[in-house]
Image (cartoon, rainbow, N blue to C red):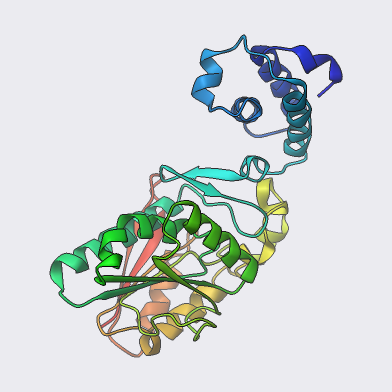
Length: 302
């Protein structure tokens, strides 16, 4: 943003930012502008819209100018601000992990429902393991919901990731919300035994694995150029890791376990075929997101 805007009020800053981001072909210039200008004031959008006459100090104006250029270059707002508002939570975000998507809220809600139903139905402790936790957003939602049950020993929560850097971010998110001691974290590849002790035969498995095709992940469209490639690339058909995880389930989970997997649009039939090919009598159903897409596959093991 040009220096002449340093003394501009919030309304003018939003207008100027919109112009800059439109010129850079931002897909949502007004929303981006309001979020960045509000962030410069250390406030939210609601405050910004009700205080259009406020003016930032020089340091805030300089910071805003840098943020606008980063956004014009395609960097996600969540990385610029350092957090994503997701499932009514503020989840810290940076380049160590994928940014939590709105679609993944369905996965978290399905996992919460599954654990809650098992708590009502069974007296035995329930072990839930999120594979490829990334920022830890889903595990954070589970830890906050079942904090008391975990303290009482009724629920054991665990999360793992192949990336030590992502696990650091997940640990920071759990600690920031006061549930760092509720979840066991371990570095590991899918359901292989991780570095730290986790439940090796969980009752509930939750996973949002990379499911973009290699071509999609390499396209660099939108935020993809800035997010970790390993968290996006699912191979030629997007299902390399899903295929491996499904194959591992019979030998790695408890009897009667349930696995909940987030998938991409158009992948449900292929995942159902993977489940049908398992040696045991497993079954698969799906949950649709708000766009009507089969977004979460539920796999029930015998």
